[in-house]
Length: 144
Image 1: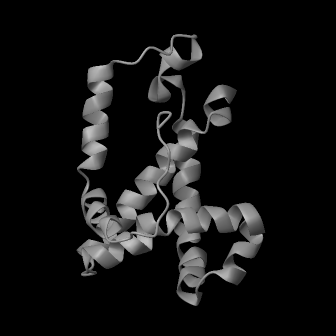
Image 2 (image 1 turned 135 degrees about the vertical axis):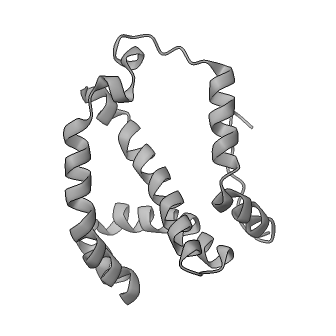
C-alpha cells in the first residue's frame, strides 16, 4: 500500500477530482465557465508552486483574502470527509494489479478514460482560453 502513496496515485486523483468539482460548483453557482476555469484548473499550478516554495502554513499569507477565507472555511468540511474516505481505501478500490507487479493497462480503456477527462467542460473551456495565451511555454510530452 505504501507504493500508492509513493507514486502519488491518490494525490493526483484527488487533485483532478478537486479541480473538476470546483469548476462544476462554480458554474452551477452562476459563475461564467471562463472565470471558473481560471479559478480552478488554471490556478492549480500556481497553488502547487506556492505550496512547494512557501509550504502549506505560509500559503495563506501569499494568496488572496478570498482564497484564504475559503481555505479556512472549507477545510473544516473537507478534512472530515477525506478522513472518512481514507479509512475506506484499500487495494480493491485502487487496484490489485498495481501491488502485484502487474502494471498492465488496457490501452483501449485508458484511451476512453483520457477522452472522458478531455471532454470535461473545464478542459473544453481551457483549450479555448489557452489558445489565446501565446506567451505560454509549451510543455514537452512524450519526448517531443
